[in-house]
Image 1: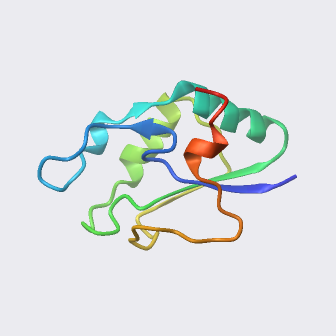
Image 2 (image 1 turned 90 degrees about the horizontal axis):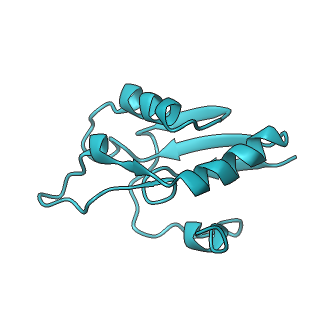
Length: 107
């Protein structure tokens, strides 16, 4: 079994680009096929850890909103971390998989 760290915005959901630099996370729309793939990984015994930067820059606590969205979207997961992810533009890691490559054959 494996441990998966999965981002939320831009990975399992999308929203319109911000006009003033701040996202309205309430308007996020789920990618159902991507959520299904991740749920299948969870159902097969893998650990799924959602980790989002929501609130990292603004300091706004988006935990309850994010929990409610994951529940509404039917996401299965081991844990959720919100706002404690460092702010970055590029994440370089030897184990990283770009979400577009991970879901390439699913869209």
